[in-house]
Length: 145
Image (tube, rainbow, N blue to C red; front, side, top):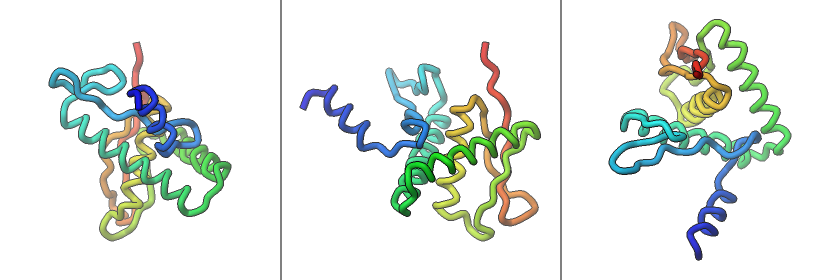
């Protein structure tokens, strides 16, 4: 199969968010890592790859749980609204399992991070707050030239 057709077939099989394909993964070229044309550190590339994988699993899980495309779109819009509302305080808050962080929680946090990125925001490292079932991370608008 020609390379172009193979890539097209892979794109069709990749889970998508309601707004389009899940964010592209960083690529390595000439020993350096790039994400959307910008050079990033190996540590950042690893984190982005992990977020990408978890976010894909999050949207895939919603499909597997039987949510319709419209329900998933509505949920994505709700998450986007949550990000927008929290941007004013510069702090993103999300409820999670009170005990050990479950894969489902990691997936949702990664999906939030990727949606925020698509909206032009950068999300800091999620950390537990004083409440055991609440994660918090800094959230700020990415300045563009």
